[in-house]
Amino acid sequence: MLKVITSAHEKLTVAASSATLVNPVSSGSAGGATFALVQILDANIRYRRDSGAPTATLGTQGLQNSYILLTNIDMMRDFRAIREGATSAVLEVEYYSGVPEIWEGQFILPPPSTVTSLTVPTAIVPTGGIAAAGGFTVSGRVFHTGGAPPQVSTDGTDATPVATETYIAEVFIPANVTLTGVAVMNGSVASGNIAIALANSTGVVVASSASTAMSGTDAYQRIPFSATYAAVGPATYYVLQQIDNATARVNMHTFGNFGASKKTGETYATFTTVTPPTTFTTAVGPIAGLY
Image (cartoon, rainbow, N blue to C red; front, side, top):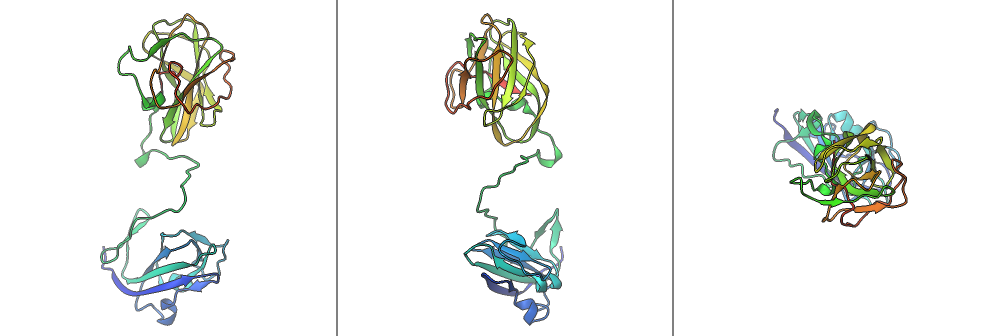
């Protein structure tokens, strides 16, 4: 890292007309500065670094409590800023001589300068979800209904299904993941057929399976979707389960603080939009996990 020296400081109020930095203009080179760090306080701004005049709706948005790095004297001279709303912003500007260390798109300044944590004034909404960190992958195998996987094969209650009912349990997906299907925990009798589906947080069905013969007792059975589903997270989803007969038994949650309910008047293997449950009803939420 090259040595970086603070060469000047300035405080600038940004109001309803385009404002420029004073030091690069008045001193010619801001006292030998080679770059500047601009902290935005009190309100959002719009800014440009090409000498063009920004407006309240034109220019790059600078959020309150964020920072702007101006990496050369021309950029400092050409910097223009205006407030975005009715509240004026304050810019705290430090000028430096030397070269900042650049690492993976971020800059690091040595003492005495300290860059504090960033405060975002509104919620961040990742419409595309959040991918796995570090180029790795996410597995759905640890995403269980109610966040409560069984510990032994006798967990849950051995429930008797009704062929015209859909059984619903909430499941949380914390990151983007490609899902193959749902692993359901069958009860003491495997009889007839089973179908599963996944609904999003609004209750709309986003993936479903074909009717599949039940297999195995007091054990997990993996039921694949008709096609893999790319789930976006973090978000709440719901596992839906149907069985075509009353001889079979399925394991259901008996206790919890998550959404669990059932929908009556259904046709087996035909999943419809459900009302997302917000309270827990015992013995109707399937014990299941994703995969």
